[in-house]
Image (cartoon, rainbow, N blue to C red; front, side, top):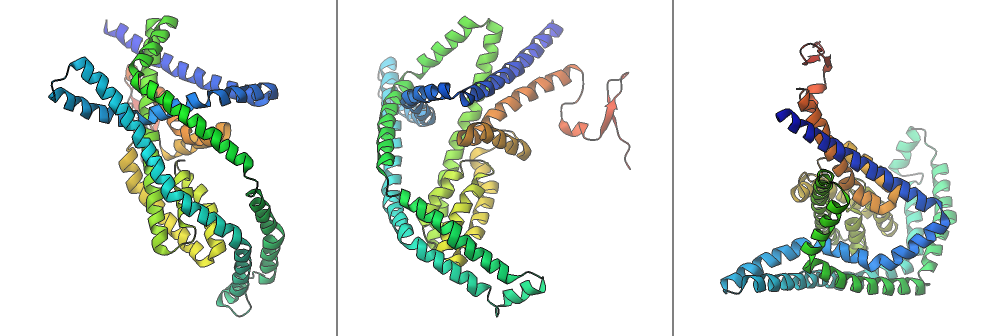
Length: 424
C-alpha cells in the first residue's frame, strides 16, 4: 500500500514536470510562430488591441485582490458586529471592498500624477532648452580636465596615454554624433499628435479595464470555480489535480513576486527622489521615476536605469554625475540587502545565477515583459523540477541536499550510499 502511494506521488511530480516543460515549449513555439509570419503578426496585434482592456482588467484585478481582501475582511467583521444577516453582510463587504480597492488605486494614481506631471514637464522643458548649451559646457569641462597643465594630464602621460587623441575623439563624438542625434530626438517631441491619440486610447482602455476589474473582483470565486470545472471536464481527475496544484504554486510565486517588486520599486523611487533633492541634483523627479520604474526588473534594473540618468545629470553638471553614480550604488546596496529581502523574502527560491538566466532568456524572447516575469515563471518551473528530483532521490534512499553531492565521487552499488572524494 505504501509502495503504491509512493509510485503515485512519483507519477504526480513527473507529470507536473512534463506538463510544465511541454507548456513552456509550446509558448516558445507559439511566440516564434507569431514572430515569423508577418500576416499572422498583424492579425495577432489587432486581436491583442481589441483584448487590451480585458487584459488590463485582469492585471488590475490581480494586483488589487490583496487590497480588496484586506478591506473585505475588516468590513465583514464590522458588519457581523452589527448583527447583519450573514449572506447580506458578505455581499455588502465584497461590494464595498471592491469599490474601496478601486478608489485606492485611483487615489494612488492621482497623487503620483499630481506630484509628477508639473515637475516632469518642467524638467523636459528645461532639458529641451538647455541641452545644447549643456553639451557645450560639458565639452569645455572635458577640455579643462585634460588640458596640458592639470595633474590628471601628468598622471595619464606617465601611463603613456595620448590626451590629444582622447580630446579629439570626445570632441568628434559630442559634435558629430551625440549632439545631432539629441537634436533629432528633441525635434520628435514637437510631433506629439500620435502620442496624444495613443495616450487617450490607452486611458479609454484603462477605464474599461477598471470596470472589468470590478466584475472580476466581485465574482472571483465564480470565475475560479468555472475554471476548475473546465479543467476537470477536459482532463482525468489525477491530471486535473496536477494542473490545479501547478496553478496554485504559480499564483503564489507570481503574486508574491510582482506585488512585492512593485512596492519595492515605489519605495526605491521615493528614496531616490528625496536623496537627489537633498544633493541638489538636476532633473530629480525625472531621474527618480526612471530609477523606480527600471528597478522593477530584477538584477539588471538598477544598471539599466542608472545609465540614462547619469547621462542626463552629467550633461548638466558633470561632477554631480559622479556623485549620482555613488548615490545609486549605495541605494541599490540598501535595496538588495535590506529593503528587497524584507519585502520579497525568499519568494522565488532562486539563486543569483538562475535569476540572471531567467532574465536573459525571458528578455531575449519576450522583451521587457519577459525580463519582468521571467523570474517568477522560471521559479515555478524550478520548483516543480526540484520537487520531482527530491522525490526520486527519497525513493532511492539518497540525500536531497545539494551540499551532499559537492564532494561525492559516485554511489556505492551494494550499499546505495554516497562515496566521497578523499580529503587532501
